[in-house]
Image (cartoon, rainbow over the protein chains, first blue to last red):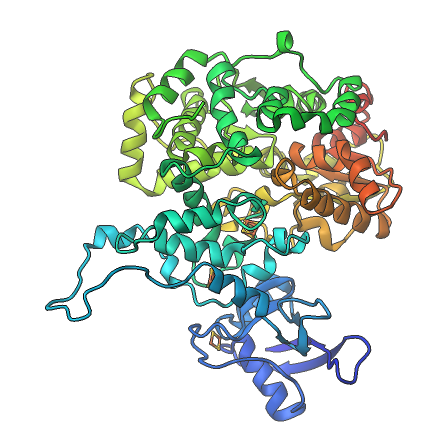
Length: 323
Length: 285
Ligand code: SF4
Ligand code: SF4
Ligand code: FES
């Protein structure tokens, strides 16, 4: 199978700006992207830099961007990639930000590791240092982790995250948040509240996830960080650590609105979430009103199934609203 | 062809033009519409943050409304689509969970069976009507450069949408481009077409939201787009209603019309602009 690889090249020591080198390679039916990179390095151009170690999807070091999608080079069959993207494959580093690229496909992942460290990615518990037997937990309780412990810290999710791309450099990101859940869901961990308080902050924590679903899409281990973030949201409310802020009010506001109308009262929801701060939306609100995009309270439609909806909320809600 | 239409809240409130134009276009395509007036809000990916189980139960009921009618449930909003489809996937694959949800539904006289397909209008018309038939209704070729803006929740996560969105590759989607082409417009290719508009953090992190919106608008503009089209009313709100604020933030002057998908179809079908609700837009076409 003949495939063209367009590979990102940048050596900040000598180059002003990056360029792409093209390699036309004959690859075997079972080859993976990493085989192609090895072939380039070992047979064509020894100066190409990239990271790899285990070759078995375990170490996470070979993560790269392939036609816009973050993948593990060693776990991505070329055949599959060609089916998805055609036979010109573009290989780039996880981040092309100039200050991040060390050389070619190798980037500095300091921001990623710092955030991972910030969430204390280890079990916190008083343990008997001389146990007489194993500390067993039933399979049902292990299932609660929902594979969050499979994370290999490859960074695929972090460098695809739209919150990070949008410039929120403080945001802990999908990997660190999924890691937080890995411990808040672990019955042996004793720092659940502390962990939830950490991620309950606007800016760094769960409330700044823009819900782009990118982390689910790229994670090579099926960790599904976004769903873990949702679970953290739920735990924050369940454990009573939710602070009153625009994001928590927004989430609660949905219940209030659906209870009242069956559907959302969009205007009231913003008012409820923002409080007095709502005035900052005034220019847009006026423009929307002029274009018939705002429903006044007496025009607010109601669902025809309101009774049923109210009953379902009454019997299905799993914890109380604060106000 | 008959659809059970789940309008979502937005098409009944801040984007009335979406519902209007959908009904107009459905008429031309010979689609009969039954609006699910008893439906509840899907939770818009925020209710689940407060109470995930409650969000599942309410959406299971929404799907039951279409099942009862024996119709396909068709959505007009990316986020509604994701919420409903997530619910369907979960209930169809986890029997124990389905029973737990059905226990609640029973109290109001429903049982979730999993018999209805849940599909966004974009993919529903591609599947049921097809490009060839759609092309037959074109009376006024678009003759413009149109930038598709997919929005996150209709393409990701692809494991959720698998099949129902005709196996779209979320990194190289094709559905909207294929429609633009049969409407005789020119699709603009640009990086931001598969990126996020920032809508869901607009209240808690306005700066981030505006950055993402501005990025997308500038990218489309720099690639020669004369207008943007999106299948999501939430993306529409950010790209149209918030365009001025976002552009100001990056010191640019922008006037990029942003159309709902049915409006684009309607224009090419020669439907009157007023009937398509184009007068409701902040940035005029
Ligand atoms: S869903 Fe949230 S955490 Fe995941 S990539 Fe998107 S913004 Fe980041
Ligand atoms: S969650 Fe998945 S994508 Fe993110 S770092 Fe861990 S293994 Fe990689
Ligand atoms: S080389 Fe270890 S994950 Fe690819």
